[in-house]
Structure formats: structure tokens, C-alpha cells
Length: 236
Image 1 (cartoon, rainbow, N blue to C red):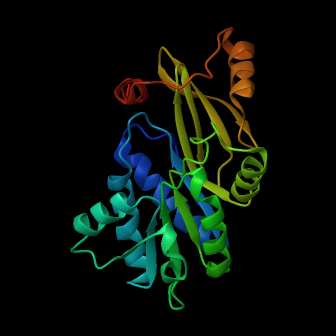
Image 2 (cartoon, rainbow, N blue to C red):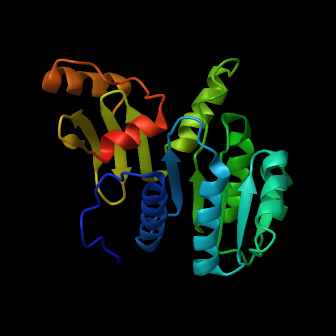
């Protein structure tokens, strides 16, 4: 079993965050995880550059025996153009069995939404015990109009996944997880970002607010709207 030898620290730029996410993903796979989610919750972040870095790493690990699967046909078409020199098979979620070839060794699903959960479950069954990695899923972005049964199916589906990497800037800190480390809440201080608490499971916004009130007397469960402001705080 592969082990992480040194603790990983909160990244101070987007490139390092992506590199950490890729390393955490392949470490989780090496340790036997097959359902993996990576989520970089930065404002107005374009997912294709992140997916490109993941695609390069998948090529290095699996050759051309893997599939990149997009929820949106337009995003898939754009990726085909951008990745013309990378020898990557790109499919859409709606292509069903064609998206899960028998000789594929892994699958990278980019930015799926709750609308595709039923199709994703079918793909997951076809994938079996092969690595199935979701990058920046947006399974909460279609809450309006989503019935109770659909929400329950989405939650049941999502709860079967191991979070290999998660980072979310907050007004006064950050929520972060880099596999195999625990979930960490960081706070912004005069000296820069410092760890505040470690928890075994992903904390809710209410949990984070409670932690900040206990430690600082302030609330910080709100999403930070400036990516540059966040990394400026980290690099001080």
C-alpha cells in the first residue's frame, strides 16, 4: 500500500493546488479507492485547464486506455479541440456504453451536475472496480426543481465517493482536504494562513461558523468571492 511520507501544506497558488489534487487522486487510487471526487471551489474557475492537467497525468498512468467524460456536449467538443495533440478519447455522459470501453483502465468525469446522476450511476456500474474520478462536480447546482427522490438519489450516489482533494476559500480562512490527510479548517491571521482545526469528516457551513466563533468570535462560513484575495492571504 502506498503511503504519503510528508504532510502536505495548504497551497499558495492555483498551480500548486492542481498538482496537489492530482497527486492526492493517484495516491488514493494506489491505496485502493475507486470512486474519487476532486473539488476546487474557487470563484469563476474554468474547469478545462484543471481537466487538462489531470488528462496529462492519466495519459502518463494509463496510456490511451482511459476515457474523459463530459456532462456537456459543448464542453466535450471544446476539449476535443484543445486536446487534439494528447491522444485522449473524449465522450459525453449521454453516450452510455460507448463511454465505458472494456479495455479502459480509468475514467475521468469533468464537472457533472445533478441532472446526470442517473446516467452517472449507470456508467459507474459499467466501470465496475476501475477508478472513476469526478473533477469539480456540481451536484448541488440544480437544487431548484429537483424532487425529493432525485435529491436522495444524488446524495446516495455522492456519498459513495472518497474525497481525494477539496479546497474552498472562506472570508476568514479556508476548508481543505488533501488525501490521506484529514479535513482541515484554516484561519487568516496577521501572520498569514494558520491551521485552526482538523476533523474526520467534511464540516458543514454551520460547523465552520461554530469553529470560528469559538476560536475568534467571528463567523466565516461564507464563500470568498475573490480568488486573488485568497492566494494573496496565503502567500503573506
